[in-house]
Length: 250
Ligand code: BGC
Image 1 (tube, rainbow, N blue to C red):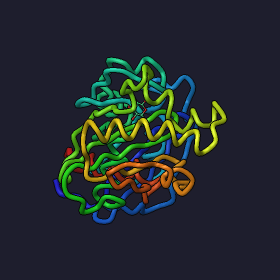
Image 2: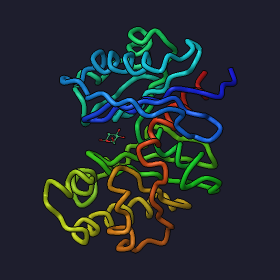
Image 3: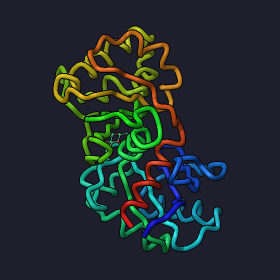
Image 4: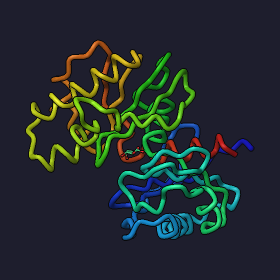
């Protein structure tokens, strides 16, 4: 089915946000609706909130819905969950969302959604070869997009570097937790990005997540061969990418 509009919903640790998206441009067509992430953040409780968000926009029942979540998603199946309720592990998230929302829903990894949006509509639009998009937040998410095609579930935030799970050293949440100043945090980002660069030799890195608004404090401190640029879609990236990937899944 060819469609011009889809609903994108981005599930985060503290909030769930959604808006309808213009699939030509990636622009949000209405103000985002935000509802607190329920606690415990079980798949059923999250699906109820997603249903509530979908209802507020009064969309045609045919409009595809993409839901981005902070875990790898293999055709709806969740092999593990790092930062939401552990009951997500092993479930078919597409099925749960479809049952509770009563719509055709496609569940997607949050970084895959945001990275895909940056490659299609944002900072890496038109870049040939391999785009690696990363999100620096509670954890580190990653997306690999090769000539416009998403290679899902990359999970490069969990690379083991210097004996640590990378996101436990270099996520934005760790900067806050350990009260690291920008140069201290940048040293950890340097180790992270130089390792990913050595393994993949990408054409470009895109850096997203809320902290990317302050990119001038840390990106200039990184010494890499690969161009590294801030995301441009910010809060809208996960929503736009989830919508676009859901429409492609129809
Ligand atoms: C999860 C990823 C997710 C990233 C950002 C990681 O801990 O394993 O699936 O994309 O956090 O939310």
